[in-house]
Amino acid sequence: MIAILSINEKSFIETGNIYFWTATINKWYHLLENDDLKKIILNSLQYLSDESKISVYGFVIMPNHVHLIWKMNSLNRKEKAYISFLKYTSHLFKKYLQENDPLILKQFKVDAKNKEYKFWQRDSLAFQLTKRETAIQKLEYIHNNPVSKKWMLAEDRESYFYSSAKFYASGISEFPFLEHIMDVF
Image (cartoon, rainbow, N blue to C red; front, top):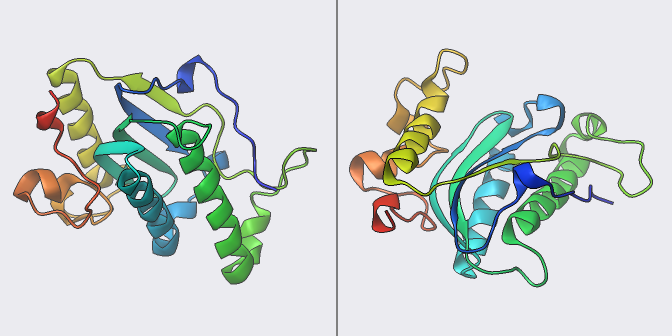
């Protein structure tokens, strides 16, 4: 069983609005250092985009968190697409770790009646973007994250693969789900 997510004001996302959104791995564990698990996130974003459930304008996948600038376009069945994203990635994280690294899977085991594992911390941060300047500022923040002194994951923003920085610097995208933020602001 996978963690059921609760919704509060901090994580509330209204369909049709653009948000800067952060989801953090439970206990700040560096689960996403593994490229296979990063690919689970990318595939989930691609699927939800292909189904027109979301629009993604910027992203970065860090070792223990994800930042997105995105919009929920419609429900995914009966739930908001970000809930589907968190549930689906959790399900695939569990499956991957069961097959490839059961010791790491144990790090996410919880003692709860309604769940066996918890991969994402509760209450993802959602901040609505209503101004072009704020959207640009948040995009810069996202793209600078991998090259910050804390992380030093790449020499420059554009060379960190798991980010939209290269797309914004050169127009070249490895990720078909990406849309340009200036097309909406």
